Length: 356
Image (cartoon, rainbow, N blue to C red; front, side, top):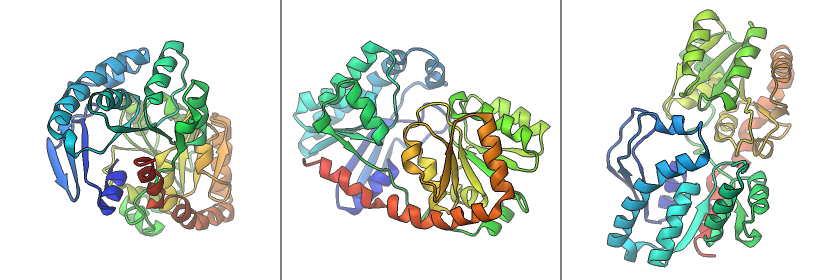
């Protein structure tokens, strides 16, 4: 969202973002935050880790939890500001539902972006989702895998456009591997990095098992979530497992640059994997599961796709640890690959969707 807002601001759009205060962490931000050409308005909503607890239940529970606050506050906002709003851009299905209601009430163009491959196993939920998305003027799918899924549940093909994320190439850039290893006290270590939510389906357990098999490789975990406790326990027992917690975005480039490999051992159909874009922009190859949108972000010149199983990840990382020339060749390709595929020129497709 920050990258999109920065892009829109640069293109002279006036953007107002309506969202919640953080509800999955204890962090708090200003209620209203104004930047050049865009403003963020954050609404209070009860957290207390409810989001993570409700994730274990059917999707309807998270829907019911997330929708009311953003809907009520958005209606009040639009009542005051509808004359200045040309387009509503909703992100995800909950915001999509809110966008549909606002579109009908205030007669505005609606664009909905998907941010995941949802894996619609519940017929009722898939039907409701299709109805929400078909009410939009344009649906932006984050990958071809996402597009395929949306078509399967009944979203009209002419409405769907596939877009590609991008990252700030000035922030995520080459900083020098040795320098960053020294800065993070990872000198002379072969570093495998994981960045993401610490939940089981992200493959945390798989990666811990790989670390047990590869004691010469250092595994660094960055993120927050329910699996933190397990990671902290393993980090105490094993010298080659480092848990660094949630890393502020401005410090992430140092970790990407210090890493020899980024891993994404996802056990599910990952939407696209933003961390892939960030790592490649910092010159770090990726080893990822051959699931979902990950396959679209990585090519053989910059990474390796494998089944999300312990043996495959263990053998692949061991091979890169021993075969430094192979790793060096991929590393050399990463930055140029990222500049071609993941620059903010991708934003034009989104702005085009605001008008046609």
